[in-house]
Length: 431
Image (cartoon, rainbow, N blue to C red; front, side, top):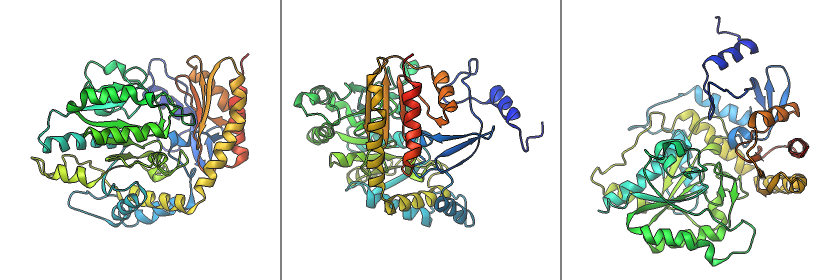
């Protein structure tokens, strides 16, 4: 077969014969849709039709697609170098990005370790915590306390701190490191705080503190584990308890970082800083795979005193210059825009236009925070069937489990957002 200029039919044939998609079966594959190009908030399909993208490519394309400033950043860097090893080498895009991240993340995070995916940034955070306590002579502090309904990635250490039932990794329970779990926060984001909301977390932390290296959680928004939004007071309480009982705090802001919740970082809702912070997804505006793990002096100094004397990790494509260059451009673009105003408008529109779903007897809840709109169904959805109906309606919305949700680009026009919400309201309407 001539592999140049493949037709849609040929692409689909190769896809069906050889390509394994995420969370899919090759014996019973889900339908796929051939995308030929993307621009703004639209995906163009092989048949010439266009879809308004409500997912921003799993939440990372915050400026939409084919953005001229981001394109320029990549093309300019490409003329200099596309990649160089990071062992013993520094380059301008990485230095610029490290300084930017230190400047915009909560103080006193001031050390930056680059990697190439969100899951790996979580692995790195966990290794940092374990190596820190080894250096302190407390190798027995080697477990993590985390929250049920949480999700932190698909690699092995990351899987171990995902919800063992809703985190999609129960098949591996016998081989994963056994961690400590507290109940998912019961305090909705915008409701009155009750002290007993922290009771189970405090019980688990105190009961296991001599074995705990760190707490790891997604601040304010539990993402792929169920799209739950919880009170900033819970996060404040977690930070205080970690300080009181000498346990590190890891914040996984891979999904929430760079403005998605209405704050630049979700930790800002509670005015706290973790000891270790994981970021990814929106870091490059969806252009390249890149992630980072930040920590404070306490963690970096402690690791420097370890037996090894160095942090034991080093990805091949760490701080890839192309990725760092477009990340710098994406952050500049975000901070120069009225991103807070844009998020506020998106939030208000989602609340108003998704509200009709609350009346459906098939719906459990409708909730919105920042540029996240969620309709939670009572039963698990038929992903393929819903996907087909959304495509027929001219939108790209990818449901999972019991959730139908949107996380659009921050620069989406009101009319396009209305197309997304109208499709949800119509497609989910009970027969």
